[in-house]
Length: 251
Picture 1 (tube, rainbow, N blue to C red):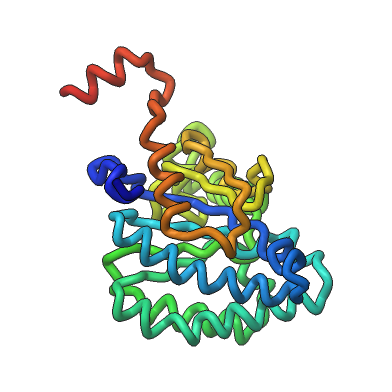
Picture 2 (picture 1 turned 60 degrees about the vertical axis):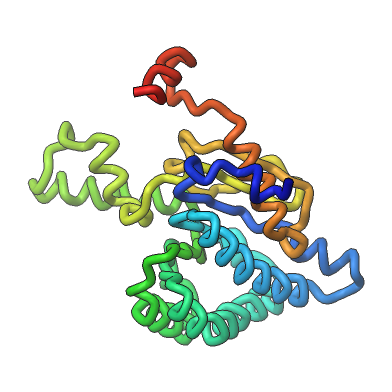
């Protein structure tokens, strides 16, 4: 039996978030420049997006560039920005054809103007995609996002638009960059690290975590299937007892 056949297609996670780690180490182990690891990682983004869509995943959020990544050597940052432009130009026609809708979260104002323009054009061109949403976290920081939401709500309270007591989980979530998306059901991190690195701190509150030693350039459809199979082996209780969950499942 193949790994795909072991998956319960009725319990596919609606939203999968992935921290794509290990591009640089993958390249270093092969005596390649780090940029070549990132380029190989781009190919995997293409493949995994289509694999996830084939399985019925509705949204795939990929941690592509963090605010901390701006502190990397300038040559690597420049190469990453160039890769974003290259990837958009290469992938947009196929995304339109395959029903992939692009979404972006993060402080993109820090990115080069040309990159911002290309991103916005791709978002507009793929807006009709219904098969899967590819949500890229670019220049993203969860702490930045939470502070930004708090500032918006504070300003509204100061302007008398809302009252402080009106602020609850729903209103707060509505001011996050992911307000248009459901929260992730499953977080995958490649590269062997066991942390979430300032990624979706609010949205991952009830997600299942899956860590793998595989570097992102080595991640493939079988890797994705193993993560989903592990996800499906777990009982998601959301604070309830096992008995309550089982009763609700039967209802």
